[in-house]
Amino acid sequence: MTAAVQQSSVRRADAQGPRFAHPAEAEFAAFLDFYRIAWEYEPRSFPLRWQDGRIVEQFTPDFYLPEQDLYVELTTMKQSLVTRKHRKVRRLRELYPHVNIVLLYRKDYHEILARFGYGSVDITSLRPDQIERVLLSPAEIQRRVAELGQQISTDYAGESLVLVGVLKGITFFLADLARAITRPLAIDYLQLSRDLREGVAIRKDLDLDIRGKHVLLVEDIVNTGLTLDFIMRVLREREPASLKVCALLDKAERRLVPVPVKYVGFIIPNEFVVGYGLDYRELYRNLPFICVLKREVYEASGNGHLIGETGQEAAAEAAEPSLVATRVEVGSG
Ligand code: IMP
Image (cartoon, rainbow, N blue to C red; front, side):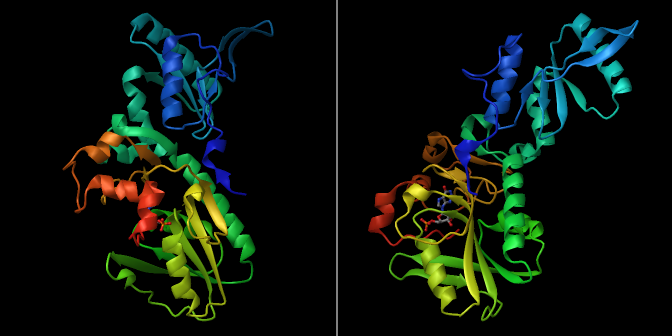
């Protein structure tokens, strides 16, 4: 089943959300929502003391983060409260040693992101205020990649296959997907170049002979389908036993050429996205999540770019069907 990105299980601190006891909790919930970290509000109370068989003291941590199996208790800087909470947390840890809990100050919010797989934010030039929105969290990506791996392993039962990745955007997805597939497999790469006069060409060809092999072409994102259509035609001529496609992201509404994509990670809206291998002028590939950048990131000239071309062009080509339709455009990945 294809997971449309909108069908996330991430809780939202909006209309249907819980009534928070404190504004700091609403703020923390909004922070978690922004980074698409799933949460539950006060889902469980832990008895801490009993008298005559009755519970006389219990502790209800503010949040539970199921993806991290972590309870979070928010705290202010007020010393009297901190001391009381520390005591309760200590007691909880003694009584329930398998329960993970942290006491969190507001200043620590961003620090815990590293624990949740968001570490690379700190090592790129991308600030949180340059992110329009996080589309897919590391946990969501990893969960879906594992599902795809399982499905592919089942479908190719008794067979071996060749995974063909299109450089460079495929780097991380292919590495994770390959490890989630439990069939014998070989990995090979293609890289394309595009020239306005000569059109699309293969810059780096496969090393392997795929004749008679089961080939799974792995793409980061399918947009118009022009790139995929070109590659499929080239590979089919080499007479593989079968040729199927697995794409992490599908901007289905942008399709100009019908291409058969057998395995789709997420159907996403028509927005320019970066992260988890996808770049904007060679940057942001190492973000462990996938996000939409704010317009000003494209519009700011000389914003740490590594390759030529205006930024707006690169983003517009991917997001604007009319531009692609009038030119021979194929992503170089
Ligand atoms: P298509 O030929 O229009 O299907 O475009 C596919 C190629 O365009 C991908 O392999 C990417 O290299 C690039 N691309 C399309 N959309 C995006 C995006 O949102 N972010 C980054 N690259 C993209």
